[in-house]
Length: 488
Image (cartoon, rainbow, N blue to C red; front, top):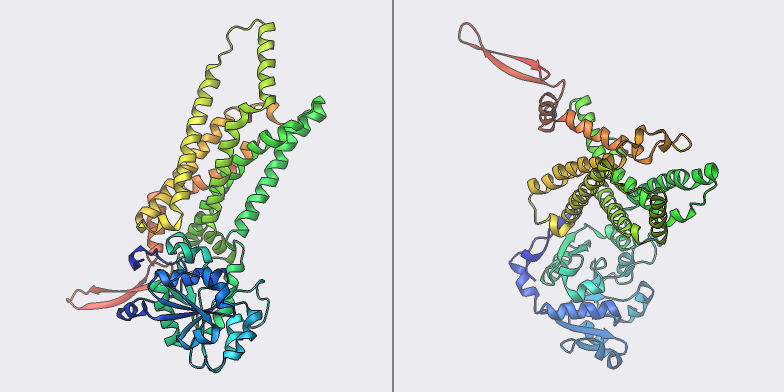
């Protein structure tokens, strides 16, 4: 795989660029110690990349059939003698079994690909422990964030980055060249002290998603409880009607759009707060509070969760007519109309309201789908900054406005109907409008020419209270210097 096919790396560390010395890397002999799943996948990828592979195993005859025919499977001692770069694909607990090879490993480059079972399980990393066992070798930490599936299917179908760290620059460059020939993007993470952090990365479960997920769950629980009180508890207490059947579908379906709508507004609220901060202090160089900084960094995850809830709402709404309770209610309504001899039940206002409500909802879901798709790295990397900003910022704000119209057409005049206030609680949709309307109003104010120009000047480096020098010609034709505040 050529370097052109590789997407831009996601981490902000030093990318080891390729050069003319990479070409000879393909064709060199690479050793692999171990015969597990990762060792087999690694051997397959190395062979496909043009390397000569020799695998060291304690039972070569038994394990030979598991590796590609182009790879040589032999005893560990024999394999070590035939190469200078060796991938150690064994667990930390089995490092001691390699001590018998200490003499033949002198001067070799050992690539530790192991991971721990728990975050910060031990004080020293696996790579540092391996280096302590073989002080005459050069240990490089790498390839531990790449899965066996990615190795077999290629970098197109998995993580493209290989995080590398070592105390030896030449050894890191050698491993980086091998990674590039295999189709990956090597990322230099520094010296061996970074090995613990690299080993912790595969063990973290969605680290960037924890706060957004807890936020979504918190909103869901709050709105679900609120809707439960209005739709189930209130009819039971006031009218002695059992409405528990509404909980699995109807109450959940009423809750999901509330969460999606509020979460979408929370994507753009931190930008409003950041703009307010810059306008108040008159500078872009003042650091935002930590909570706001974290909020800004989690906007992508919050937006994707908003789309997820909106998609579930669409599916739930589609399934509403399939319920047995809905069919019974239709029959009951038809019987009542027949008894009352009502021939025309057409309500023009309700017909138009539902038509607009559904149409606007479909448009909003379509825009949210576009926002979700363009947030994927593979799609985002194909867009320039102006295109990405237009979709995520401009179209995202339009999606928020259309979602607001969707909510308003759903509520229509219910906010003015006293029968809609269960236990004096207002309809749920009126609560969801608070944050989105605040964001929309703030965006409109920021787009006023006087505010927009000041905000643009601040973002271009202008600061309130900063003094700038100026030079003016005097009456005699000479120039005099002075200074004035940049507030003028």
